[in-house]
Amino acid sequence: MTSTSSDLVTCRNTAEFLRVLPKLLGFTATNSLFVIFFSGKRAQRSARLTLPEPFGGPAEQAYVEGVSDMIRDLSTRFRATDDPVLVITTSASFAQNGGAPHRSFAQRMRRCLLRDGITLRDFCVVASDGWGEYDDAHLPVTGRALELIAPFHAATESSSSCNARSRITGQHTVSGRHNRCEDASASAPASATQKVRVPALTELEAIPDANASKVALAAAVSKELAPLPRAAAAKRHDPDAPRRMREVGAVTRALLRFDSALQPRMVARLLRLTSDTDLWFALTLAILTRAEAPEEIVRGGERTSFTQVPLGGPHLPAGDEDHDGDEEGSPAWSIYSLLANFSAECEHPRVFVSLRKRMNEVLESTAEADRPHLLALSSWVWWTSGIQTVALAHIAEGLRIDPANELCRMVNELVDVPLFGRRPLPAGEPSDCRVA
Image (cartoon, rainbow, N blue to C red; front, side):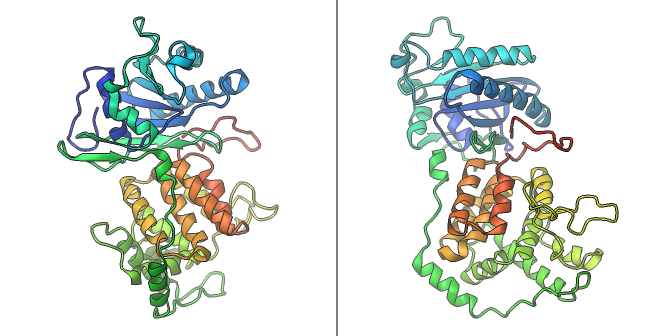
């Protein structure tokens, strides 16, 4: 198995592979299907899917068809040249099932994949009382001892610590609202001797509570900030736009300076930006590209402001989609469409892994009433890093606080489809399967 670093973990058998898998993924989860993509003998990327519920029937058939589509699509996207490995983690037991749990589901999955020309390197199950390989003719009816893969098993129930030298180079999660998909590819590297705690996915979903003293400090500092000029009412000319975009650039540079804490004054400046939809959008573009990009856009392009870009989204009220379209009535650009198309193409995805921690720090300094726009930003960050389940949790909290918040509603539509799940479809043609 390999990573973006030069560190390498050599696995001689399936037990060793399962033992280091939690560290390589960056989190653990039960009742999940993990797909690990390979190029040669090296693991490259991985995807996690929630197991179907219930098993059997049309829902299970649709699930296995979707997994086959996903594997073929992502094998091409990730340049995975060799057979993948599938791992099921489940709260079911060998004892309850008289052998490996979910065997009929695994057989259906394998048949579907073979029909589509996909062969598997291995297909394993990690249950509550044992583990095994589905095609192991000598697998005991009680499964193999969990002690052989102890770090993996401990992690499936809560969280675990394990020694590992490497991380997976990229990972994401497949999901729709009911079939979440996570990207654990960008876990922080660890040295060979460092003991690393691997969190459970449920831990990552926890949203930090507001810290009263930090909230008070940020509020006090915000009162001392010089006001930013308001956006001009004129549609095409805004002489103060460069000044506002310079503020976006300054906050972006501080936000991405991960070797130092974000000072209270900068937290207050960030909260001020995220409270304004146009500046929120400019901040996302600065994070995706360069801190200076928004200012360069307003100085050099025909548009001198971000105020003309609508929120957008697939469920806009009638009449909103052609906002500011061209003379022939083509669909206008929107915040939704730009983020949906460009987030997956980010050239520095590992930045978003560090940003996840940064956003949690800022949330501690934010009162509940001020959280919706910040939670929208945090949701987008988690989604762009590949962890859709957490993205959905953050935006759900934003909508709980303010159900009518238009920015949160747009981001909710955005993150409801996995990062790599959108494909161009002819108008009116629905998609039955969401993949990431």
